[in-house]
Image (tube, rainbow, N blue to C red; front, side, top):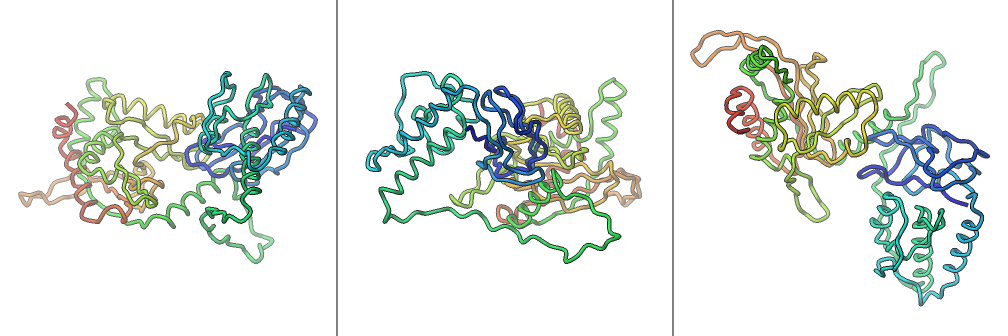
Length: 417
């Protein structure tokens, strides 16, 4: 019997919610056929069948949240010889004397070509399993994810049997936040399901707020010159959004203040300064808050940033983003100005160290340096940052640098040449 497990389909994924089954017990399936749809904190994805066979049992109810490695359903392989081979492999592995057990980390290169899906190899690699030692039970000897898990379990049992007096160190998961329960729900109250991406967003936001000591700094930026430049470009037939300028200005500022393009590694006691600039774009989609990532913003022209940002936003709204397009961000921005926002305290997209929100641009009466009253287009920004990695003075200097580039676009041009 083949166990279809929830595997890691995204960076840092630890759990997912079961949304929908495409099959039911008794259905015949072929290899790579979609079996179940799951929801992580970043995406909706489909898990494929590891082999041709018959669905025997659905083990997890829909709307349930399960951890990576949990068996979701069982499939009986049509290839009976393959199933018998699996049973033989299991029986053989269990009869190996404990003192002859092969440690998981042992590296022995097999002479034959290994057949395994990329995610199966990823599971083996992350658990320090030499995949050449694993017996494949799939079609034509293909190694399935459950083969890797079985190998790990077998070896662990062998090691435990031979070292009964040894102390086993188990890394305990971080304590979960207490679940708030309502004593009773009034009969006249209306309820909506707290599931799917809404629940995943809640978990991610709670984790970020309870892990990172947030501080939010506010700044006011004069947008007048930038808006005038955009109008000039538009007259020449070139349309570039203000956010595209923001991204290019951020890259320049981040190079001067790399601590905001970083990740804190507390375990090793270091702050990792990222060399690439992958900007997350918070998007309010029909599915909820989605954060596609514009990769390598420092290597793209202003127009390329504009066009790719439009493409990512559209994919986010349609729910067609790939996993790769939603991971790897080094800093996140959120443009809530079009919604009418004038101020907010954005939550950092863990494990990043900063996030900036751009608010509504509006005309204001400003006193100039010559003590004259002028009408200027002003925009508020709010920057939340991790106070463990930076102090307020650094954040102020960073936003001042960003504001300088936006208020004087010619200075930004010089940085882009």
